[in-house]
Image (tube, rainbow, N blue to C red; front, side, top):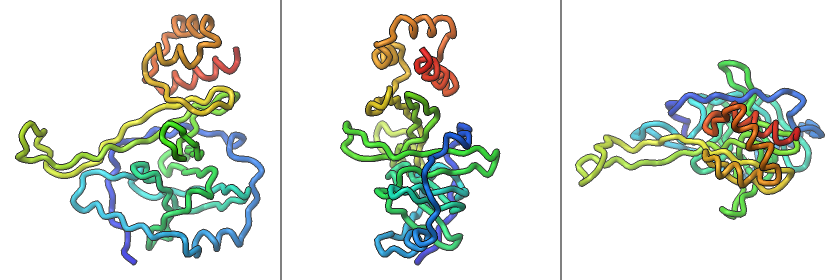
Length: 235
């Protein structure tokens, strides 16, 4: 079993602070489940090799402490966790090897930033447009939910290629998408256009239009997006 090589953080991540009362409730610690996660034969070892690649598909340079919350209402605390958002895989480490968790059994997982102690809460969400389940970070959760989806674009080296950008090596570039679940409905992508927001919040179009004008909401600003969903829920 090979050891995990060093990785480079592609871009700085600004984790939203999730207060303790918003963490998943109703989950009980079960010691046997901890053995199941570490010993289950269904778990595949992960052997990512980024020697000749710029960047990484992972969201953190180093594995961070975190928790798993499972569909049978049990959870495991204080694991070393990272997330491969390029292929949507949750990884955990024993500081020697990297393992891929069986994500279909995971409702939520959390990652605690070692830099500022803030907690990123990820929820498994089904997107019918893609016909699959993925993990997205919960930025705000009330009657509605605001999600942040971490994405990676893989670009091949194109040195010497006609019309290429002279990219010296393969690389991962990161970007984000935001999704909104209104009153329990399936999450839909919130594009950074006022017309897209108007369609999502069409049932309260007048008050939302007034809020946009008064507060000068920037749909590319994460804090403004949180304010927007909070206001929608309260009115």
